[in-house]
Figure 1: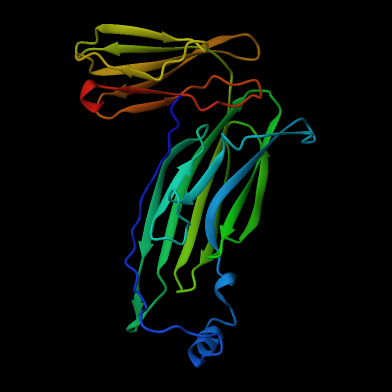
Figure 2: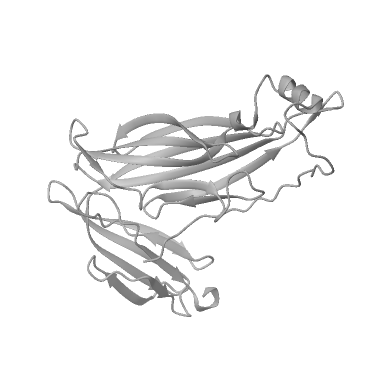
Length: 282
């Protein structure tokens, strides 16, 4: 199955200092350290990622390894968060509504203020209804030497409508401030029985119906050339044994990466996805 990552690259124009090497005893270094309130390079941390821990049982008695499913990393591949590139790499079992990066620069009374770079993420986590799972998150900060420190967030049981949000920030030695705004949604799902994709033409005629059971997942569906819209239909059975459907409508303007809501034996999603697109988008 395909792993979907949301990656946003951000290239910043940096001034490059050239010409001389500074010893620790130099007046410049001493003055700079004084102006920074006694801080040195190792004291500056910025957000580099988020780790998640999932527990099962009423008193968090069993910890489940979700390192391959739930995580967030902000460094570009083979780089650190202190390089000139920033990204958002999200675990395969997380549904993301997108990532936004905002750069704020200002001057007050002809004095240049610190640049503020704000990264906003909104994520959704799913788990099987009545499966007694809870989830905790930890925000990871990193300095230029690769040293890390953590900030523990709140934990919560999975329940539909529950959301946790917060804001953290760090600072580079040059004064740039990095702000992370996050909101996590937690949703429970009933036992999914079947996924069906129905394609329709401009006259609302059914062109094709494709059924995808849990034991025969598809990676990709190429829409019929006459398709104008389609539905992804999910058939569920709730904890009382009642059957019902959820329908997701889509047109053909952009590819759709559908996240299967089939749950694994631990009660959360494996992150399997179905790409639905036209031949032109392939």
